[in-house]
Length: 334
Image 1 (spheres, rainbow, N blue to C red):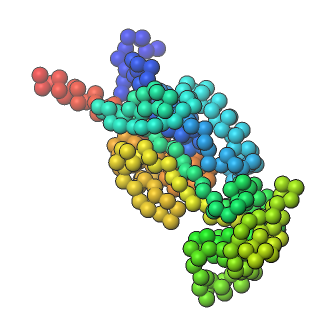
Image 2 (spheres, rainbow, N blue to C red):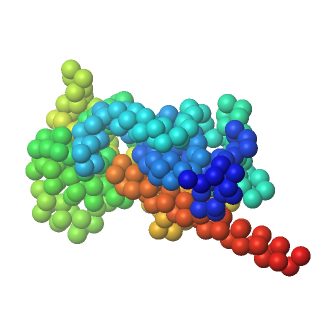
């Protein structure tokens, strides 16, 4: 057994002297943030998770595609995750990270509740917000029978009467994709922002059995709390049981922007430039989950959080080793 007065090796965390000092602060308590926290807790790193409690998939009753968790409600998944990471000593606080700045060799994170915590490393897992198209009734049913991802919801609505609301240049692609779950698909050419389908697009849509209906969509028909139709500007209603839309993605990149992280534009928003582990251009700062891209599903986000945390642990260990060597070299020069 190691004596209690033995010096700490660089590979093991040194107990912090102040309750607001952490080795790692994780901002965001969704799949990515909690997965990162699990790895950090199991690696004996003093970790704080700051969670505003606004997961992207909150409107959905279930999540899909996560082996052994298929069909579980997002709320239950997160509750189990919080309990699991707490078992490894990870601290969790319901608050919002309002600001972050450099503080010596670490980072200071100011919380909306007034507390300021310090971290040697930071993992940003703040996700994004989906803004559904502004057609009346769409936002209210988003995540139920107004959907955006066939991999998330296609099985549940399979073989139904699908509609696809064209609001951007990827509408044809979306209509072709959802045709894999139903042979009854209508592409509503709703917005000029989607552009006019090319001759090739029209041939591909026809080959997939997708009908194109022109005219502005003005609302939905809902009966007994179920979508039953899509209403057009001419007053006609086309019977549909599911409507696929392309929400506008609003990534939560404010903290990264304040730190000066390099960002890049994508068709689905502006995200940080990261390496394979999620390391950003800012020293000591990683990003994971939907903070790095629109298409990160729960299972992908969890994997990204795991990779980021493993890289952070390695970085802390190696920097600790290098610090010991630097001190030894300095002592030899005296």
